[in-house]
Image (cartoon, rainbow, N blue to C red; front, side, top):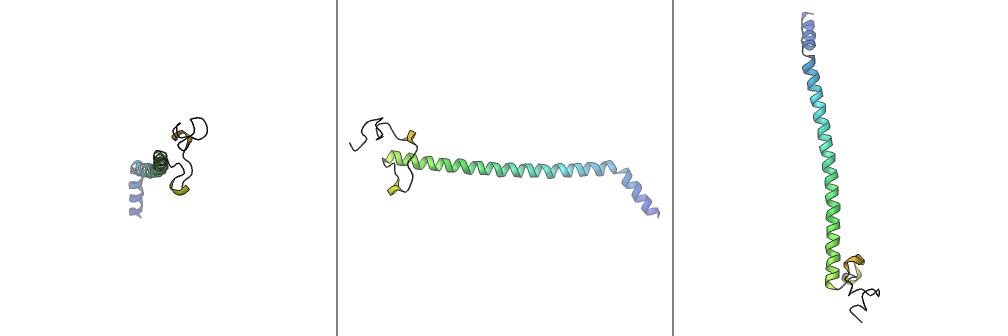
Length: 99
């Protein structure tokens, strides 16, 4: 019986230390969760930017090669802003390369 009272007295005496430990543990768990969610968000953003860069490289190669349809029409037309004015066939920049 004396041991139980001694343990309870010790826990009562250490209550602020125990509470501080619980608060620190919760803070660490929340910080890890926030950092993990930020890392996932950042990875998704970087993947999206990489896809945009890859598509821009393909479109630039299509325009510079003079083949806006890509390899046998495999790719859609690039952005109209990338096609030089002298190449366009829409009448805005002349007859185009074939005529």
